Length: 221
Length: 217
Image 1 (cartoon, rainbow over the protein chains, first blue to last red):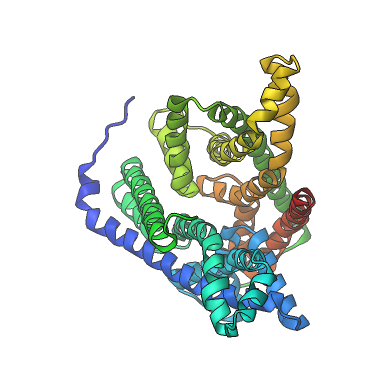
Image 2: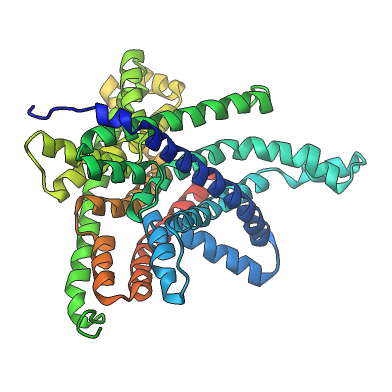
């Protein structure tokens, strides 16, 4: 083994790496929030009887699920240029992640919703609940319980996939790592630290998600 | 301007086909190797030896919690720094196979654990040996149950194989990127690439869902 590790330069650049990690979290949280909002709309559209909205939702979901994330990012970054739309790397990665998150979560939401038997709705109506109450106290809590894990996984997936920002020059964790290593040629050191940081971020997200689940569902999951 | 960029022409089809072929070949290698290794590890883990379980569990966890792109760059730089650089195809296949293995082993472990212990006891009481029980009972029942998940992981590997382009492997997305920088026609080329992935992925994902529905009843 002839390689000599120089960790010093990595620690000198730690603030920048942490800043990159912050951008990674930032873009994935935003992608998740927007993705959830759009997915709710798409799920409603898919279960709706209006043909047009149903088709739009289906096309969105199938394209998002059946093409690579990298393709989506290239499409947003290079492809939209043909229409005169020039997105910054951050916006390109964000919109690609939102597009994919929405596609996957639509199916999650639809599946979660359909897994609650409709008789529960009728039962709550017969107990004198209003429609709103039936959804608020009966349907949605059960649904949330079923979609909680898939949503957590999707969030972790977004964090990991935001690393593709490296290919369009975005300054999130991997992009920052790429820039710093090209200045110092300590490729191995920088990427090892980046890998550790991704691992820690992922674990922290999973850990806090299970803490939250314990509080939300009181152990029944 | 005219001399700088040349539009897409039929002579580019060779390059595109190379990209298509390379994408297919690396996906197949990763799926086959990942499935075989995942099957072995998944089986070992379902045999519930706590030490083995924890050991494999933590290694597989790293493979699943670090972005694939970082793994690819790390591995290819690492073997380079150790003085024996590998061809992009070899390095890419190794990383992609291990990454696939990490997911496959979870899939198979779930499958093996879904075979109820009483079924194995019944097989043993019929006079089957331990290996007969594994071969005739656990494998077929466990594997059948996980087929849709296996298909799902395989499809995601085909899509993730696009990332091997970062270490210089000429798969479809990288060839298209090169064509884009020459022709300056990003939209046409990218849509073509998207259609290719879609054509492979869409029917298979529907077939997976169909099988899943059929098995649920």
